[in-house]
Amino acid sequence: MTPPIQGHAPSMRSGPLPLSFHAAVELPVALVFLVAPFVLDFDDDTAKTLSIVVGVAVVALFATTAWRPAPLKLVPVVGHAVVDFLVGAVLIVAPFLFGFDEDSTATVFFIVMGATLVLVTAATRFDPSDPFAVGPEARSPR
Image 1: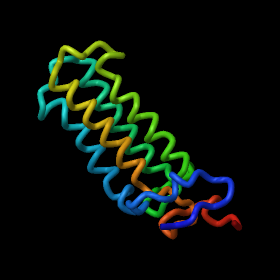
Image 2 (image 1 turned 180 degrees about the vertical axis):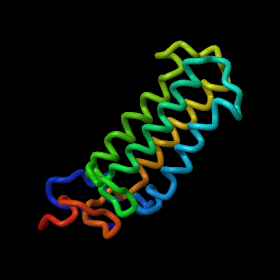
Image 3 (image 1 turned 30 degrees about the horizontal axis):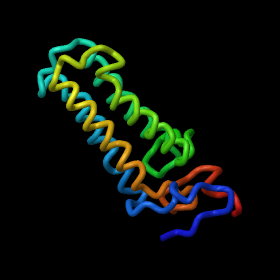
Image 4 (image 1 turned 30 degrees about the vertical axis):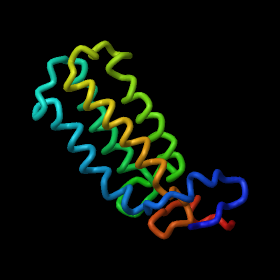
């Protein structure tokens, strides 16, 4: 386990999953969000739209995170983690917040995906000094 760096939260650096694993599952997760409304046949149009928007947002976050596969590298890896936690929480409450809780398939999908996102994010080592991370925060002296 990587020891915490002074001034940083230990929970962001101590998970069992490497940053490269988290990056590897991003695009498949985006694909799941993009196809779920059609494969699972969501009844509610809001749920369909939100799932597609989340899928596109996952691709955008992947493409702008400061890690090796991203073309833009604008978002620090720790910032990516914060976004993932927030999105996970919103996904869990989305059926009730956006009024599609009567669509049981969509409700279960959003709650399960949100909880999974929170758990995977909590289990990932978002360490900017990881060799997989790139950008100014990865190169700054510790």
